[in-house]
Amino acid sequence: MKKSLLFFLLLVLLLPEVSDAQCAMCRAALESEADNSQAEGINNGIVYLMAIPYILVAGLFFFIYKKMRNT
Image 1 (cartoon, one colour):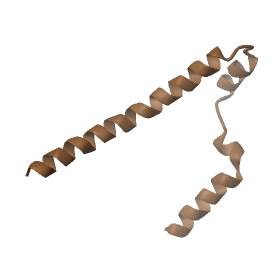
Image 2 (cartoon, helix red, strand yellow):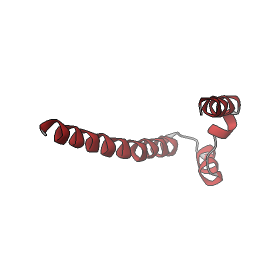
Image 3 (spheres, one colour):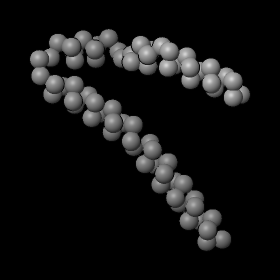
């Protein structure tokens, strides 16, 4: 298990273009803009989409922790 995880981590680190990928339409739209307002908007959207599941899971674990502590 540890060997496969280490192999995957090395593979991702050695192939940065794989982790830097984005859809062709987003790339074309962002590269054609002279100002960075659209790129900033897309980056903010990605952060919001990424943060919400973490907040929900943290809230769920906090709720479970409180319930387990009371019993």
